Image (tube, rainbow over all chains, first blue to last red; front, side, top):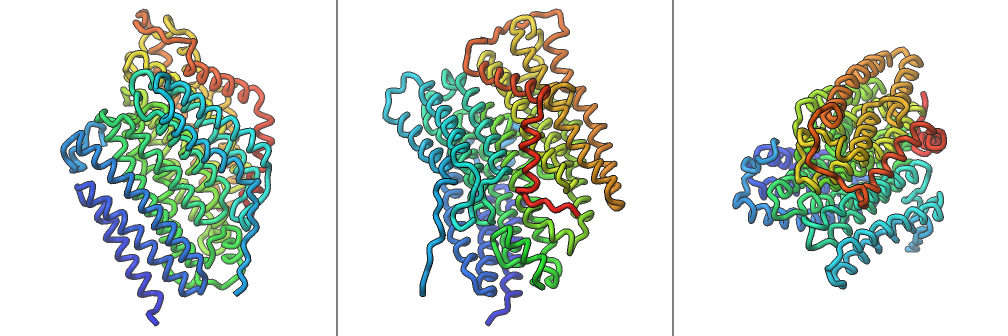
Length: 100
Length: 502
């Protein structure tokens, strides 16, 4: 069996890539994808611990997190389309009417 | 395998279920009627909130769903704040119905109600999973509400910024929660306390992970509460989004962040500080954030020319004052925090209600356009002054007592333990920055009163928005002169949140 440290390490790397993507990328869609990666890193932690502890709480948690992520993606993509119609760009640096 | 369903006691969840269904009713009502008057939809939504408040009193305290859902003093107190914030936010959006929201009115009010349901679930949950779902249900409808003027560039920009920040902070929070789950072996906050205290669970042996988890949680909740260094979104989002939504964000969403913070960081993790981290380490981390909030919020607010941005910075500073009570980690502190939030509801919602009426009438949110308002609209100018003075903490208004109790709790704790003397510094920062706060609040009062010009605008007194101003005024004056009943109720909150006094 793969030790739990390996899963935690992988999750941390995934989370790091996601956080780095959000902070560095200037494309709203890529930023949004990076957030999904961070959520999945958390899901991996939940599943790994759930298996290690031998309880199902973590599995249930993951299903609901997936549902929430889907809802967030639905709202998020709709809003990205709206702002694209408004500004004709998805570069976050160009959204500068309100001082960042 | 025998599988037993937990005890579904729906009675305690009645208000939430009702409000959720009512949100759907509001949306379908708007779809199925002729769109002549949008006001009917708003009145319907407000009516639903009142009924929910009554149901809250009927449902009383208790536990349901296998103790995953709790109604105790803390959750009821905060639910009243959420309902009040939603009520006043909807009440001050009547002006928008005339011009800016011609379509999708049902969705606008329905989403506010759904967000309120999320906050109420959050206040009742005693478990990580439902807490997370509640938090998401709170924020996702507000993304849409912030961007509701979809042809307005500022509103859409505010929405997208809130979306990115909101999703990012939820991800941080979830990562912290997932580590917390693994380290304590449970999602139940009460069980978590016991597990951390009694077992030799890997909480102590796994090196950096508990620390990472706490940092992620503080960061995620810090975004929700708009505490520095996670505050930059707040001024932009408040400026761009519809004014009632900005008001709802500054009170409802902040109170939701606050109760989540109290539940996770105090109810779940207090034992952890005592046993693993020194409590003062955790305290100093949060104290630094709180001082940064008070200093940066108050100093940046001085420079603002837009009143919504100014109120945003002021609400960042107010969150800093609230955090003082949280850091004190004693009984008085939690009660003071709750009372603070209650007075903040009236003062801040009232101030935003005046801003909303002014914006609907004049189309401006610049502070300079309030010039000479006292001559043409004495009621609104006087109410605005009262709200701002309450936010600044001038006696005998409600805000004074709120600040007083928060500072008193910190001083009491600082005197009680030797290693807590840094709390005096925190109180010192709080008192000093209150002076800055008074400067920019007084500046608006000066603009309205002490000028020879007469404002070209006249605000209507007979409107639902002005009724909301009146409610705020009554709240600020009444609970300033007679805060006893609220304080007595708030005194039960620390016990409900399981604050342990060392």
